[in-house]
Length: 163
Figure 1: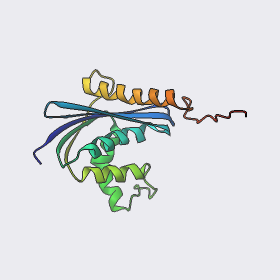
Figure 2: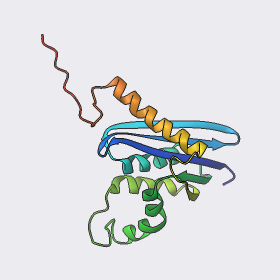
Figure 3: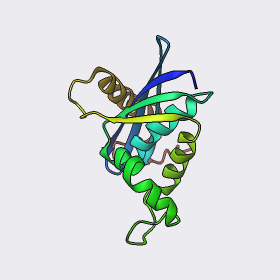
Figure 4: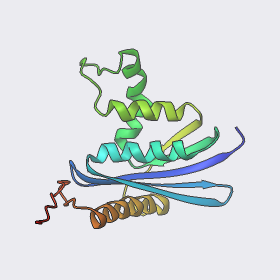
């Protein structure tokens, strides 16, 4: 794994649940790629997970990755909880289903191709790449709201045209 990649991710949600977006900044060999996406009804935790998933899935080959997030949820899940969840069949210590199991499984699979060092940064603290990822996440929300009938609470409005 000779390719070294830096990834910076963030998720955002207007309402929780509500309209959400995610952003990721990928850097490799002096080149930078920005990714973003949005969903009409989601949570901030799902968007934080999607940012990391989308960034890792965008890598075409196995890489040495330093992934920086401001999400304690993602950091705790990856570094503390996931191994036990898997041992227990994706159940918590209280034997309840893991929240966002679909995305945790997808993240687990995406991680398998890479060597990843996970780093945490305080959100909204002036970290340039984290701030860019945050802007991308909010841009994705704005674009979704501009092109659809989704209000800021994530409710899809019905468009009924009288004929």
